[in-house]
Image (cartoon, rainbow, N blue to C red; front, side):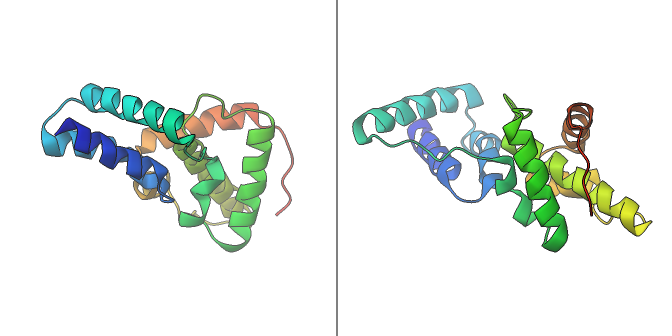
Length: 154
């Protein structure tokens, strides 16, 4: 049933795990219904809940995903980069998942250069952790690198 699928997607969107937001494709496949139909019902459910219950889902930020990819010093630097991205509105109109993945990759590249070694996180590894394609990570990485101009001390 499309209504059940839309409700499941709504719960996934509101969860703390940002990877669950990518679940619409899997839900669509499981019930053999087009994504558009589920999305239409999802939007209706969301608008009714927002009106009647005055409930708004939490807005996501690129740094929501970073702890699932990085840790320690690299996570701290990645969060600083994410703050710069947010302050300068570089992430406007972009998925927080893709921006977060690109920030994780940028941080990994910085630390790789510092250590003088190959990075342990490839675009492909980051993409699979987040649930996006490596091409998306590469494209978002290029966009951020073109727009980011600041010095990071590591």
